[in-house]
Amino acid sequence: MLALKILIVEDDNVSALLLKKALEKNHHEILGIAATGEEALDLMDEQQVDLVMMDINLGGQLDGIKTTEIINEKYDIPVVYLTASSDEETLQKIAGTNPSAYVIKPFNIRELNMMIELAIFKDKKEKELQKLNNELEEKVRKRTADLNEANKELKKALEKEREIGELKSRIVQNVSHGFKTPLTSILSSAQLLQIYAEKGHPMKQKLVKHSRKIENSVRSLNSLLTSVLFFGKADANKIDYKPSRFFSAAFFNEVLDVVKANNDNNVTISTHFNNVPKTIKSDTELLYQVFENLLSNAVKYSKENGHVNFSVEVADEIMKATIEDDGIGIPAKEQSQLFDRFFRAKNVGITEGSGLGLSIVKKCVEVLKGEIHVSSEAGKGSVFIVNIPIG
Image (cartoon, rainbow, N blue to C red):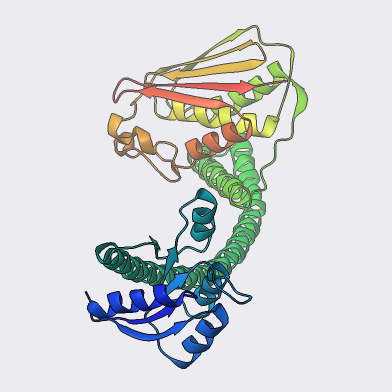
């Protein structure tokens, strides 16, 4: 056992001398004997003490428990209580001051040494734990400060990204709108050329051929710009659901007329409508994007003289549309990327396309709070099923 500098606080002179003798026998240094709590505190102000042996019942205004509370707060050194009482009330008072140990009078030397060792060990471990807690709190404080700083930088970066995104969106929309006006003029001119050629122009065949090329190219570019504008709105969170009531037959006829006008593969489109009400309440612009893109893809990727089935049925205010083709299909390993922007399957070959159509379909279906499912096999066609709530 290490030799300790010990202060004895005991108002019974005989007990104090016996305790001093027992402690000195174990090579401890007794710095003094105090009969009151006040005297003990005065001695501790003057000397460096390692351990206090404290009697509970003392003369003076401070008893042992009150004196220990002051020692814990001011000096933070271990205290071993000395008491002749072992009743529950006394032990509860002792426990309330978190003593390092306590010894019941009369004590034997072996028990005394054991309690002193326990007190020193407990004090050492508590201080080690407190040190670890302080280090942990400091690390947490520093880490919190670092995180706060990182959050500030992240907010700045996000704000900058938002500003750049808005600028990009404005540029895209302005440029796209700027292209649409001259494209409309080019398309009108191409259509006029076809009209003039039909009136017996000597170069009728060439005029019709090239004017149709111009017209098809303009339509393709116009479709691409429409897609770019759509995603400009999507990225700016400006796509809103705007429902209105419309005539279902007129709507689907319009979609089919546009798709058939661009049908270069002589694909047959079969339609089946079951229990579709005369009027439907939904967002016509979003629905148009869904059906026009799905049907156009089905026709575009079908074989020459192929066949496309388009069926629509309504039940429980859910419109279920199925678009089935017998075209090139989608390779299984690429189907997970099907709705990604600009994605085109490897088997599309030279068929023109931007890779934006299905991305637009997916976004529109989400805004309409619907679902889209696809099943496909390379070389055996594809089936797209769309479920959309309607009013």
